[in-house]
Image (cartoon, rainbow, N blue to C red; front, side, top):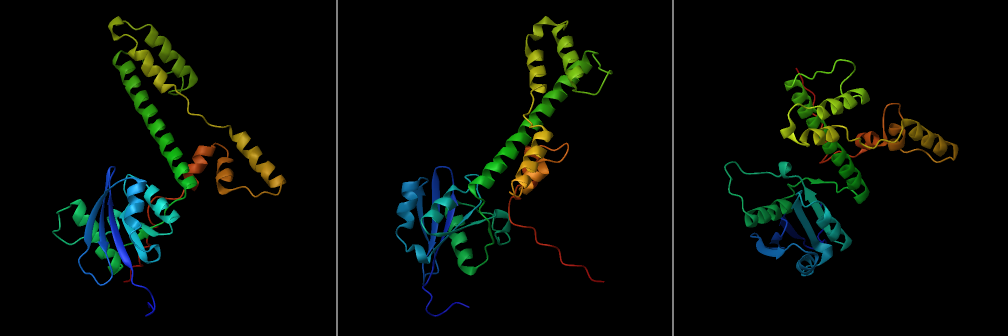
Length: 261
């Protein structure tokens, strides 16, 4: 329960976009939030929050594609900033009108009512690991699609490979030689470019090097991190270890209550 001596709080809801930020400001003793719109840069943000006492200001904004840079900036200024997931924001039935002004003011009201569920802002190191995992996943998917296109092209021209598994070193070499002997010169170099895309190797440190790194850490008395131990497993790589140990996105899942009867 809040103490009588606690200072009144000012709640600010932000609707963040690439070039602009709409702010809904709900000051103490006021039921209708005021609205302000600023340019999305550090100077404008500092000017906006500088009008209030950092000790009594609470800022909320939705997790947007703009990332967590705004939350880190406000935290460095000593301001309590919470990031909320859009899927966990209560909405009234039939309320389908969405504008920047309405969203910012609604966030300020819900923040005062205590109906917003904040999520944990990852550190810059954790976010870098997530970016690395996402880039690798995108590269793997692009290579898979290129292989499917090239395989369909070879199949349409009756060039079927049955000597070993698909996309082994032998299969890749055979595909290149068959494409170099194509019977339709008007296709140009497109086929060879597709072959290069399918054979682009993703860098993977050898598993033996990973296991040796963990052994050296244990011998030196330095405990190996879960990332290094996962990456040292046979058949696993450091990138796969990062994918397995990276914190999940969004708030933790709430366990379902047990069913009775």
